Length: 272
Image 1 (cartoon, rainbow, N blue to C red):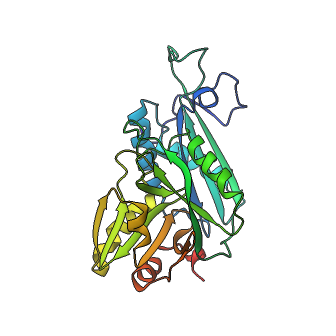
Image 2 (cartoon, rainbow, N blue to C red; image 1 turned 90 degrees about the vertical axis):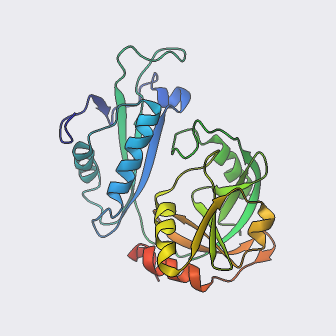
């Protein structure tokens, strides 16, 4: 398929009750920031979407066609959150795939302004992520574990994000963000080989770290190792990097390394 050709898919259709995204969470999504009429991380989001479609054997929409659809849906918004959902499409009863799969694409847009809260107070959730290398790293539509963790946070109004661990007790990420912590000029981030989402901003942070003399290690870390860190922060492609100032009862101060990464990578709308 040529990058500008019309893909074989359904676009922003009225939701069909046989949609596999509804029955099985059979699909992927991307959440993009549009700021000052631009989507600065567009290429990285689309590359990740295409990689995810390849892993799940879902036909990927053509890049130029999708860019036109996103521009059309968000044309009246200077700043917006854009959500792209790609589903395997319609199917009958049961797990058997349709004979001629035709992906469905949905583009949703929401007005956006920079959040007033410039740091996070977090809690380590009791809900655990299952270890599943088949889906690790993917931004797939199966998010029920995160929904259960979010229900925990509803009972803690002072908490603005949660940290979720896997079933073996190792920290993985925030509910809508990736996790980093710093000790002795080393930037640590949990491995996503077994669970979690490989975030766009996470990759940018890893690339930027070398420029400020931070070595990077990815591994399996306990919550105690996180609590013993000098600095810690969460990141995603909408808010950028947000310092953590408290994990449950323990307080933290945003540090110089976190500040340097924020200055280099945060979207302009996120900088106060």
